[in-house]
Image 1 (cartoon, rainbow, N blue to C red):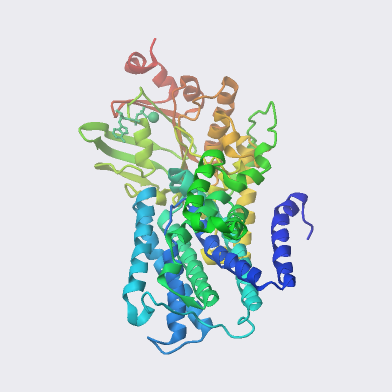
Image 2 (cartoon, protein in one colour):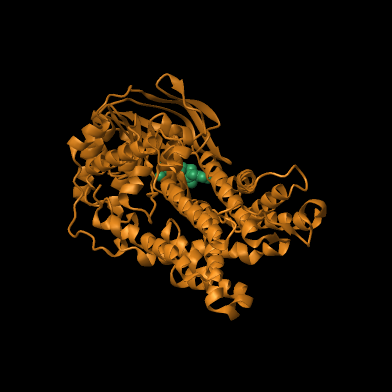
Amino acid sequence: MTMTRSKWMTALPYVLILAVLALLPLSGNEYRALIGTRAAIYWVLIAGLNLVVGYAGQLAIGYVALFALGAYTASILAAGNVLPEVSPALALLAASGVGAVFGVVVGLPALRLRTFYFAMTTLGFATIVTQVALGWQDVTGGGIGLSGPSLPAPFDTAWGLYGLCVGLAMIATLITANVAHSRFGRALIATRDAEVAAEASGISKPALLVSVFLFAGAAAGLAGGLFAALQTYITPDAFTFDLSLLFFISILIGGRGSILGPLLGTIILTLLPEIAAPLAAWSTFVYAGLLLVIVLAMPGGIAALLNRENRKALPTGRVILPQQAALRSLLGEARRKQRLDLSGIVLRFGGLRAIDGLDLSVEPGEVHGLIGPNGSGKTTTLNVISGYYKPQEGRLTLGDSPLPAGLPVGRAARGICRTFQTPRIIGEETVLENVMVGGTLAGRATFVEALLSLPRARADERLIRERAVLALKAVGLDGLGDIRADRLQHSELRFLEIARGLMLHPRLVLLDEPAAGLSTIEIERLGALIKAISREGVAVLLVEHHADLIFDVCDRVTVLNLGRVLAHGTPAEIRVHKEVVSAYLGA
Ligand code: ADP
Ligand code: MG
């Protein structure tokens, strides 16, 4: 296999780190073995935690708890003071298992609690674990502690253990990189930065987070078991808040959404107290200082400093030129056409009837315009259809089966996609990756298959990437695939959202003011694109203020006023409708 230059550049830092790790034993200095082993053990934990913190954006600051649980599980089982003694290998495996279970237990609050509240629960759990370790003397040895598992040869020497831990650290790196570069990794970032768009793409946050918490917990538990073997003796004070901060800050220094950054962060933070020994006593202070520097001076962490793509010049004078042929190959294979029906929908916000008995049908193969003054309920209607709002009355059906009210995640699987009045994109990811998020449901491989990068997972990646390239061509953004999305212009983001929606091979496309902020020529091309999408058999519901666009592309128009249908008909009928003209279109 030939590697491209950019692939080499990506691999280079890892090769250098590996070379240093491979050469370290030649120094013969056993103290270095200890430091290297410790860094490798920390990395096993941090690699997993990186998916939670760096990718999913969950502030899990108390991971030392899972580390301690792993250490105690391995030690207790190997000592045989509660259950019959087990082999060290089995003890490590059990540590990993206990870590996985408690990883989910500690993680579950994240499904309900936001940021800092979740951070506090993880810290609370860390305190509980330490208190239990102190108090449960018969089992844990209390403040006196207990011996760690002694591993068999060849892992019973300093360099033997070093080899084992470095090997496991390499495996952890590979596995997390596999997840990160799969649809699951993109989905994690999507839930972090564009949660509603993630939902609209069919990404179920609870299922995704539970998989990641299981994995990160298993890694933390294993790391704890290895740590107990390294220390040969563990006490509760080995598992301090400082250590938890080290884990967390390694990821922050490294930069979120990166594997290499946090790896370098781990190496730096493990080496720091060794290089500057007097700092060891000041570690909390140093960490706090580092944290401030990162937040203020380099919010993107090491990864942002290393990223060259950010600084690549953007193509100038670029135009958005949708390509019909690409659209046809993307939506080509026929999909059963279905009609959307709303009947008697009522949605109240407190006393306000935002939608007041709405009937609406959108036919496949047609563009249906939804217009009306500001506040007439257009966006709310889209939110009802896409499941974000649960109407108090009325029925929704697509095809022959009802659409359950208030369940946004299921909409993508039914073939409903949408864009947002304010584009919801992942600014830190490339344009292509943003579009690929829309293809999450197209994947067949499970999380475990993605973890190991098995053939099905790789086939998923190829398929989703191919489709995303097509989708970018279809909306006219090809050539911008590897640009960070936050560098695009506003008008390009609107087309980007359409591309992401098309990845679903939709039956129904909901567009919320897609022409806002576009130039005249861009609106014209948008109109042609919308029309072309509907001509592939897709039902399109278009909310728009630009009357020209509405009258150009719509087959049917519904006019809303105060949450009610004011008029309904062909563009020609609406254009001359007396009430519409006086209430909305104006003179
Ligand atoms: P538009 O037709 O401009 O898209 P919307 O559907 O956004 O109108 O809003 C319809 C009405 O419902 C407005 O009066 C708006 O203030 C109100 N509304 C919309 N969303 C909410 C909400 N989440 N809570 C309370 N009122 C809302
Ligand atoms: Mg609106």
